[in-house]
Length: 178
Image: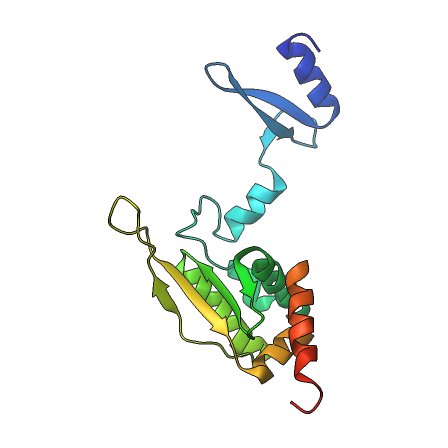
């Protein structure tokens, strides 16, 4: 495609259109399936708006509004994905997670406790020091450290990637008698 109208025609064939946003900037939007060239919001954006998550920053992130209505398997997968991204598993027997959003950290902690009986430490505020003086914004950290809680986490929360293997190795190292 050589021109904007050629690109728009290609996008139209895919159910999208090109919309001018600012000087030299364009946005690709979805078309209304009824055929009237009305622009629709992306389905993910609509979902994020409904969940009161659209426009969140790292500091204002929180759990989706509907999460308390989800089944345990869905919540376990959500938490597992979160731990894969913003969590850690140590060889000393600690699974932890943190965020600069207190609300998100508290929400994950509550779901672990209320849905799965996995208890964790209280939420600790941490501040990293800047080289030039002062501190960064606080982050909020929470850890699961008891063996029974760690075993429960291993059995019910699937963590994608290497952290699941690390947790499996740790649980297996305790043996059946622990």
